Image (cartoon, rainbow, N blue to C red):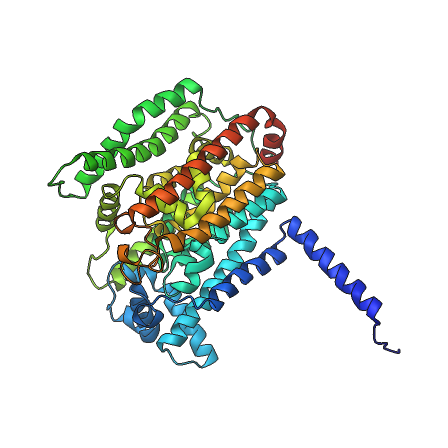
Length: 508
């Protein structure tokens, strides 16, 4: 056999075929090319020298996680870690194992780099899982692009995994993506693995347990009950009752966690509580209304294997914490709800503006279409509806990074709702807005532009108390405009939705 060197024409033809294949795969939103795009975003972050300028690039909480890398499991066995951090040792121990494999010393620079590699690896797998789930649900290329841009080309997953690497946010997102994939693909073992990892990585992910208790029904296993949408009159009634319902829930939470009262009331205080109470009331009111209208659809009993698995997981979690935590109650559940309530009375619509900054346009669309998002979740089954409804109630938290485990599910169901509206023009507008919001948020609120308004090293300013008035105005107006546009597009596309809805709900 004689090997001949290809001529210039042959090389050109090969390159053209490769280029055309890559462009085709990009149009169809296949995993390989999208991974290349995502890694290009991360490479840009590296090139820009992204690193939090606190504690040698480790940040605040990152110092604690770095100490876990240095001490290893011995710190857990010696009960040196409190009740909060003992449930978040997983990523640190994984990084420690990586460093031992390559023979690197656990020093700040190598620890940070180890977390970066860990984060980018998990997020790459999460992207593949989400795209596979989208294919299984019959989502088209445009919707897969929106899912990719909305979840990855943003500060949450495009910048923070490198900028503030030594924290568990990327692990939480991966666990959420793995749980969602297990639900869509009907792989309960994958969900069990995800919850087992959550015990030592991100226990808040246990609020996704309804997906395990009520797994996605098998195709043709039983007749599918039609999901009733809310009438205009019911939606108007929910809107009228949202404010008193939300304020009542805020008052109930305040009593449960023994939150001290507000000493100095002012008109601004009333405005803040009213707007955030309205958000909480809408989240709870629409979920309750849909549940009442579709009570027959929701009356399915939990699966016996799911109940057994959930009891097993909860038992392991409690026994692990009781055996190994140091006895400190720092960052307990009460403390978490106290922080949520502090955000709720800090600035108006603090959570919505923070979510828009963190996950860009897709977070705005999910909020604008919340009743329809709940309806799409209900079509998937009681488990998806319960998990999405819980996520809506937790969305009052303005520190969006703590909701990372829920965003894959919420975003996925939001894209299912928006699958009904996509035209090429709508898709391009949405994608362009996602990119603009994700890129402008940091320079609009970071110390490089408004240094006097923020403390040095304040890495996101998505928490209510640390956002400037300028940041709220810019991001809030953009969020309002995009939310209204998405809502109008969905409303205009409703008459032509029947065929698309039938295709998605009948996909095996």
